[in-house]
Image (cartoon, rainbow, N blue to C red; front, side, top):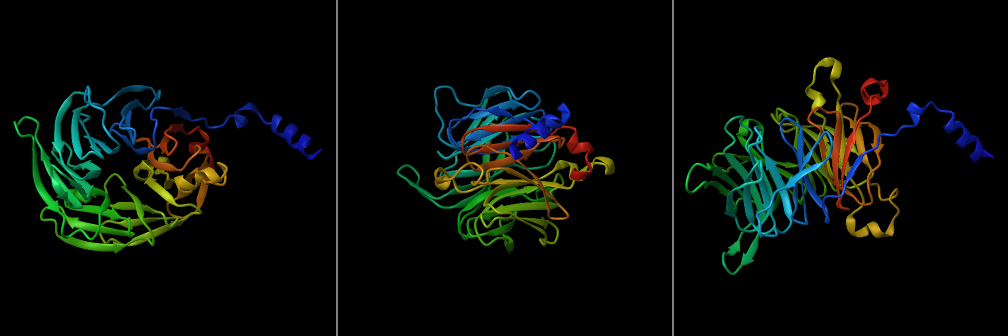
Length: 363
């Protein structure tokens, strides 16, 4: 009887209420996603995965435009990708130790045999002068190069020259352990790295000196992301928390406690919007570790994307994910939706419906 009443009640809702926020589910990769990155204008995003594919996707229609690859070569796992603000160049960091630069249209612009297992790459943030990349790699012993240590490096790129890539900085002996990700700090003055011991380290971008060590989390830090001006940073961790930091004093201002190990967290771009459009929201993704997933149902694995309030530290809601943990999340540049990349190889593209902008629940 109860079931009958409940079913009738659902059917009596007006059609608008029943319509769910349905994502576009893109089966572009065969292996787990490693990163999803939007261009500055937000009309395209790039996804990369452990199958070596790097795909360019149009945000509005979610159709794949093409893939970045060198003809005749099959790349190994790609751990990171970045794109310049003017959408001229794309760079990929692969497990084979190669840093490959492409034009946005897909032509090969340059290849650097970096050495080690490349974990991350990012262009510097100076508009109109994005001629440097920061990288980090794991140590690796090979016959051709010998022992390559754990390193953070800065390279200068000028594709008009015969030798387009020049090494500017290398941090190796000062590195306490391998960095899993490294990004530019505010105004390109610092580098910010994270590792598996739960620490965040701030380095001088000119001389590689260690400026600050923050014991941020109790377990591995899995990601770091910033607001547009890079003055606020959010870190996520396997210790089931995400933390918000100010980049001028390196102080933790907010802590977001969840019930799952987190793989990524991102701050809504609408934090910096005009007063009427402002949304103090944070998106997080994670879930039970991939190797334990076979033992649980999708609901108990906690694979949903979580939406939290940035100031009140409260959960606003959750959006159903796939059949494995979420490895990466990214907001649309206009804050009107988000993209997630999962362990199951699917890219899910969510466009918010009007309730997100009109309902009091989401203020």
